[in-house]
Amino acid sequence: MTPTPPPVLTTREHGFAALRPAIRSGELTRLRRGAYVWRAAEREPWQERQDAILARCAAVAARFTTRYAFSHETAALLHGWPVTTLDDRIRVTQTVNPGGSSTPDVLRHVRADLPDGDLTTVAGLLVTTPDRTVLDCARYLPPDRGLVVVDGALRSLARMSPHRRAESEARQEATRSRLLGQLATIGPARGTARARAVLAVATGFAATPPESRLRWAALAAGLPEPVAQLPIEIGSRLFFADLAWVGDDGGWLLVVEFDGAVKYIGDETDPAQAARVVAAEKEREDLIRRHAAPLVRFERFTTADLSDPTAVARRLRAALPGPVRLSPRPALRPSPTRRARSW
Image (tube, one colour):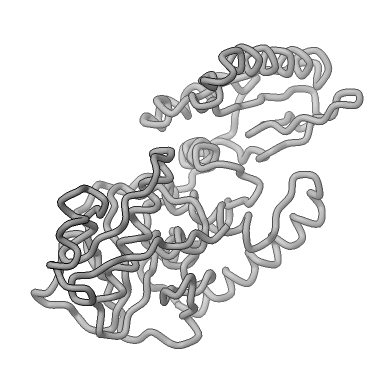
């Protein structure tokens, strides 16, 4: 779902004197110099962070006078896709080099031109189109962050559903082909090899960013490509594995699940919720172990595990039964840390 930025009040429009009482009382929260937003009711931390970024987008738009568009991860967020930014800076692409006018909360990417065909409007904000946003993120982001965005984009653009797998895969491959065709027109420019590698392994069946990051850790290490949201039917029950590797003869199955802590936290109004979740997870795992294949192995990962992708890949390789043929994917390997820059 496309998010909507909250209304922003600026001192340019209203004057500081008119806003001062609400600022002093804490009813207005400062976004950036001269821009404020009404304090919202307490929400989940990720929702509050998203609202803050969206509000700052509106604040930035109120001050820009040159030709620009919100782009990269900021555009992905505005299109309603998941992102894993390392900071909360707003990303914009503009046609004029800002020189000394840069601000710490905005990362500006400079491009020779911004064709109308690359631009669209989302919630009243000028944003790069979905296809342009996918290609920008796939080219310029580190491959793990790029894969999170592209997975989410495919899930949205191809209307993916694990319950209608064949239809979803057909739409996904058509979308992938279109994006690769557009990438080919760019030529051998910076980041195109990385973008091709990310687009080749992206899947809209990945349900969450952690699942995308788990899959990236495996692929970057050269492990065989897993199946995302593999359907496992046992009797009248249907399960979907976050990630799974299946033997060539179907004789073994490695099921990999991401366990976010939030699902094990009991609701204040229902303290037994966490216990029911644990029991349901245990029942599901036992059923799969008994009925899915002659040999089934499970590996579970948490948010803390994702901080060490090398250890994740090592665990996965050890869990796969029998020898594993590695397929080097150098374009997916993590890049050395570099200072943020404009392109």
